[in-house]
Structure formats: structure tokens, C-alpha cells
Length: 98
Picture 1 (cartoon, rainbow, N blue to C red):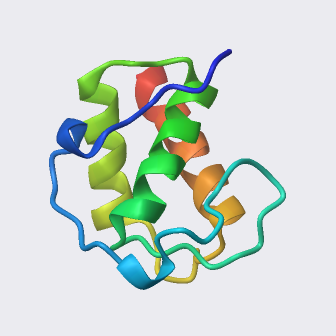
Picture 2: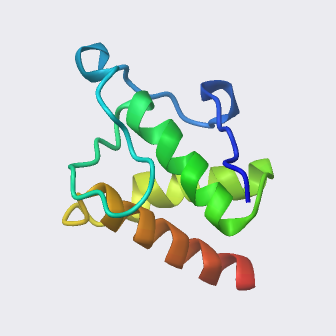
Picture 3: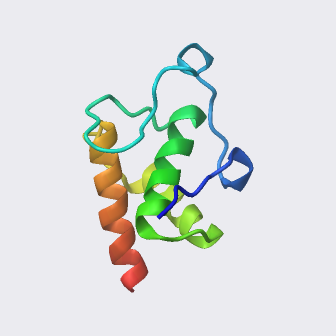
């Protein structure tokens, strides 16, 4: 499945822009043990795009549910990009299954 592109205007919440790290490599798939910055738009966009693609979804409802899950419910000890990806995919599959 092709990568679904998520833009900043698609998101419900506003995020900071870590301009110093803007051009450093971002999440592009597993494995990726690098730390995930859940407050940086440049980290959030590729992560949410990858999860939406993995789920095969392109609807705004799913995107906003996942965004809220990441912000409000994701434990702080989940810190690497691959852990974040696995958490979001797993939880969203449960939520979408109803």
C-alpha cells in the first residue's frame, strides 16, 4: 500500500516546529530505535502517515482518534519511534475493530 500523506492542516492539534532538527532523518519504517519527539510536527507527520498507511485508512476520524491516543494515552516510557509505531498500530486496530 502506498504511503498516505498527512499534512499539518489535517491535524486537530497544533505542534511545535523543532527547526534545528527539521532536516534530520525521520521515521520511515522499522527498525528505528531513535527517540520520538511527540511535540514536534516534523516527527509527528511521518509517524502518523506511516501508521495510517499500515492501517490502510485515509479518513480524518481515524487520524484524529490516533492523534488523541498519542497525546493523551500513550505512556511516557514509550519513547522510540518503533515503539510508538507499534503502540499506535496495535491500539488503533483494537479501536477500529470496535
